[in-house]
Length: 368
Image 1: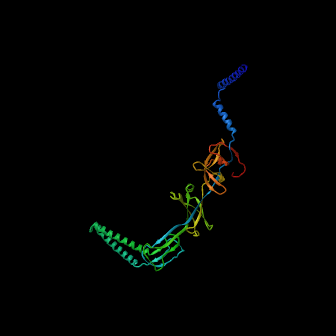
Image 2: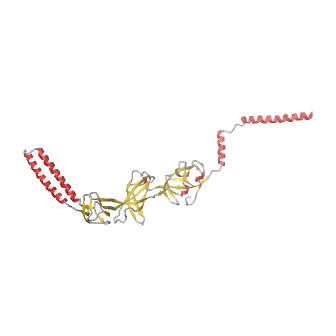
Image 3: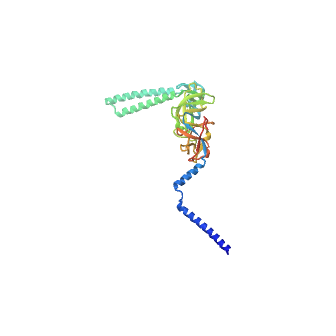
């Protein structure tokens, strides 16, 4: 009986203890309210500070003045290339220049047989003289009132027709002499003495190599940096060079390659540079602010744009698109950035745009 009483008391004690603990727990919500929003934020920030930020190496840089050459592969081209056509038919009577000869504008290259062209010219001149006499007589009669105005107009028309025939006869005779229309070099002679040529047959090809044109194609991203009149140079495979200036910039791109044709003109007095030679064209671009970097620090954003990652004053990462100005195997020059920045040189591949980091300033003169 005693043992039953003791057991009952133990169970009551345990229940009492549990009840007291429950009342205390429920009351704590009133006596000790939950942390405020500001306090919760402080706790979160303190927790975040305990979390270690990713470290990156940065260089504090200032943009430098930079001028670079736009390099284009091109080809030398004659300033003028003329195929001379026979303007009258006939036999080639004489040749005065041969292939490879240097000629001046107006030089007589060959003679085509005159045939009856001199006789036609003489007849045309006689007819003009006759028509002129008839016109003078009709005019005198008309002024004295012995002839009508119509008769005078007829005489005037006949005189005009005769003069036109005379000019044509002179032209036909002149065209029997084939002359050089431009200065240049005879690149090809198609005819030989004794040949018969028909009207429109090619007789000579003349190329003018002074000035010399060197043409090439520039990429879309560089065409805006080239201006007409800009000094330029061209170097050929044998090491020879010429200096000139930009003389032409295409207004429309090549549809297939999306490139723009440019031309430079340069003096070639002795004709040393021939037509059709491969050349490396160098055109200085305008001076600008740029950074010299290691190619390894370049990144791509989600849109596929090329750029670099920098750290702002709040130690937050920012992606900045760049324009590549010059590209070498060891380094490159980039533009399109602020005049001063903190550039991430190591660790950029492990951090994201907008992420807070722990920057470590690099020392020394290296690129990384």
